[in-house]
Structures are given as structure tokens and as C-alpha cells.
Image (spheres, rainbow, N blue to C red):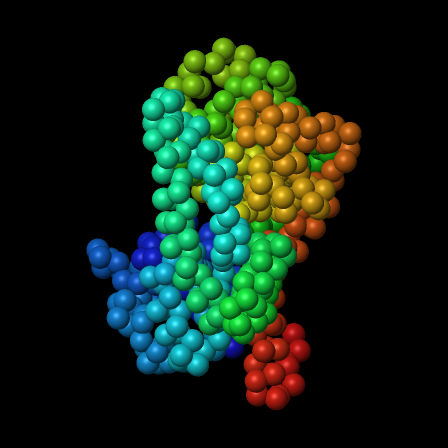
Length: 401
């Protein structure tokens, strides 16, 4: 069986690319013996890719069923964010006769309600210190609502081409099913999961729990409105003041503001806050295995990959809304009650107390979540589902693995 993956943007196929999304899923298919390559649009710089498992085409080629048909593959797993401009590519792949898997990190199942948009917009205002700028942003909410509806109008037209859809949670899958049913579209098969770099050996420390309690946060902090580094640093200051034992490790692209806050802290707090910057993913996973709680201060997320990775390395999680919902419902995290640094810090301290009381077992945590978010596990589920779908189409009995 040949299952390729597809990224709808011309990413650079470097080592980091293969730790996320389409690149990671490609490697996972290869690890289970499935022939796989990554399909992407051509880059403007036209630099040669360092690996041989990349297929690039022009946008004209990617929108051509004939081009897809000439690849000679059985299926393609397309990582999609529901953008309308990507629909012609997905439709062309479907018309070529190959099976379509849509890998989506959508948090609402194609719908963003006005109240949800209001909450997200309000959260993104945190770094805007001037009331005038906040008021200007809030007045744009009706336009933002219309814009989001327009951006997502193509999501269900993409879903109708899918034979298989992977979603973060069963709730999201249910929302998608309902939307497809309302539009009288065919119902694809659903898988609960998303590819995450969680297949490393679980080389845990021999200690039951690291001393002192450790917190980890991973994100692209230069995406200021969405990831909210200003909110993060306020949470850090509150935590460091409330608990003299806590250490905090922050990974990802940083901004000067974060270093400014670090320098302003008292020495006793400054030496417990670490800004590691952009690091290799293996280093981040190693740190996660030594931490208690992973936190996500984003204004809105579906289920960020670093949080899934943290769960699979034995951590519990803290976040708001969709961020922690899928973990908290299973008893592995806390949802923040109010969107402010004090409430967020209290949620983190609640999680630390759970670790102190022995509520968590690191190995058990990791084992449970690897079943959901291990990239190899997801690749196996996709392969097995495609075998069943193919058998139903041809009438042949499915092969056993």
C-alpha cells in the first residue's frame, strides 16, 4: 500500500518539518512498512530538498486529477485548515480515484459561533495595553465574525471529498458529522487522534516525581495575538511569587519582551525561570519527561501538538476551553475557570497538588495518551481503516496485520 501525505504550503523539508504534521505522518507510515512521501507545492527559491521522500508540483499540477493519477498511490493524507483556496487540490486528488484522508486540527468542526469568536477576540486583546486599541479591536468583531464564516465556508466542501477524517476529539468528530448530515453529504469514517512526536522511548527518571515541581510551556511566542506571551509571563510571575519551589521552562521562538520580564524579576525568581528559545524537538521531549505540568496560555486552540506531546511524556496539562477539555475530561488536567493570570496560576497549583497527592503515575499517563496521540499509532489506524474501506469497495476480505 502507498499512502503519501500532503502539506498545502511550500514548507522547507528540513529535520524540524519531519517532527510535525505531514512530515511526521510520512515518517510514521514509513516506520510501519508503508511506502510514503510528502507532496508539497514548489518553493520559490527552488532549493533542492535534502531528503528523497518529497514530491513537489506546481499549483497547476496539484489541481490536476491527471497529475495525481500518475503518482500511482492508493491514498493521500492531507493536512488541512479548511482554507477555501485548498479545495481544488483536494477535489483533484479525489477525482483521480485515490482515497482521501483529511487530517484536521479544527476545534469547532467547521463552525465558529459568535460567542466563541467574542471570547477568542477578547483573549487576543491581552497584550494591547492602550484602551483605544482595545476598543478599536472590539468594534471589529462583527467583521471578524463574517470573515471567519467566509474563511470556513469551504470546510464542508472539503469534508465531502474525504474517505477518512482524523479529529482531535470525538466531540469535534460529532460536530463534523452533524454538519455533513445537514448538507446531505456522504459520511466518511472518523479517527480520534492527531500526529504528535511521541514515539520516543519513555526514559523516565527513577524518581516518582521531579523535585522541585516543574512547569513547561512550548509555542511560537512570536505569534503574539494567538499565543499570548504577555499573558504567559504574567502567569509565570504569579506562579513564582506564590510558590518558591516552582521552576518554569519555556521553549519556542521568543520575543524581547519575555527577556525584559526575566531581567526584572528578583534573583530568587529569576533563577527558576528558563527561556530556552527554539530547540530540537528531542530536547523538548526529554524536558517534558522531567516536568509535572504543561501549560498553554493561547487565546484559542483546538489541541496544540506540544500539549499532546506533553501528555504522552507523562505530564498533566492546564489550559482554557478546547485546550485542556480533552485531557481534563479523562482526568489528566485542569481547565482554567477564568481567562486571567491569577485563575490560570491557581489551576496550575491545583495540578501540582494532584502530583503531590499521588494522583498521577507518569508511566501510566504516557501509556494512556500514546494510544491517542502517538504518530505511529495513528498511522496504523489510518492504514487499517483504508484496508477495510478498500475491501468494502472491491468486495475482497481485508488483509490481516
